[in-house]
Amino acid sequence: MKIHEYQAKEIFAKYGIPINPGYLCHNVDDAIKAYEKIDHNLVVVKAQVLTGGRGKAGGVKLAKDTIEMRNHTANILGMDIKGYTVDRILLAKAEDIEAEYYVSYVIDRNTKSAILMLSKEGGVDIEEVAHSTPEKIHKIAIDPTVGMPDYLARQAAFLLFDDIKEVRQAADIFQKLYKLFTETDASLAEINPLILTPDKKVIAIDAKMTFDDNALYRQMKINELFEPTAEERKEQKAKTKGFSYVHLGGDIGCMVNGAGLAMATMDMIKLYGGSPANFLDIGGSSNPTKVVEAMKLLLSDQDVKVVLINIFGGITRCDDVAKGLLEAFKQIETDIPIVIRLTGTNEVEGRALLEGSKFHIAETMGEATRKAVELA
Image 1 (cartoon, rainbow, N blue to C red):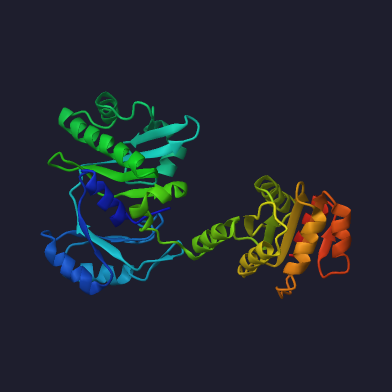
Image 2: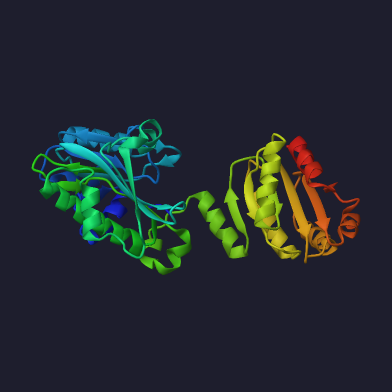
């Protein structure tokens, strides 16, 4: 789950991390009122969208007076940034910057811990820095039983700063950011850039956070900030129906029982030159109601040209699955071709039940996949 910069900054402030405060504005009138409250002529107008690359897209602008601020606000509101329409901006005082740094905590599966990532190359595309000059990024694995004690925080701060006063400020921020990271079940807590001002203050002028979806049940206040996209709402609905769904953007809708088989099915589709529209694991089920709900979900995707149903009957019998499918499609009217592959317990009986129906029947996974790709 992602949140906006202004929301992340509010969380930072609660944990005592120094930020440059701003005002959230939904229109030009809001921005004019906010500008009057900021005791500084030079301000920054920042689009608030749940994606990166705002600056490159023209969603971050400096303004030196009311006229520039009005123009930038009007131009940014309504702008499309990577498929997100800007409906709000953050207006904040523009800080004088002597140096910029990158700081973040992320989950690292290799070390099975959080890692602190640091770089003197702040304010730029950190992925490009990692690709072109990986030696400029420092990574410190954090032992979860130890956390971020004073000595480790200072050691990390010395990688960015030389002056002890700046080191102390940075170390304090690193400790507070780690506390925030763990207590909110975050998967990312990022400051880019962390800046040093001419009067030697260390401040976070940007904030980015994402959270572990599986922990939101115990983070109710953070969960309230969730602004799901249309696809995320679809994934949430699927979860309430008892199956796992992820939209992938292709044209072959997949309905499979079992996560491993679903992954293999998507791989096979790619192998034969197709493009899977989704990952959909309905679990072990011949329940017609569940099949109906799954089909409705697949058919709601306008890009889907064919549906591939791939069922392995282990404990679930293939003849029961076939009966469930026939019952389900009495309730569903669609012209989209449907390819069905049944294998496992009572597979012969299951395929026999489907003979003469409108379905395209396949015996093997390869045959089913090739047929689906051909039909798509």
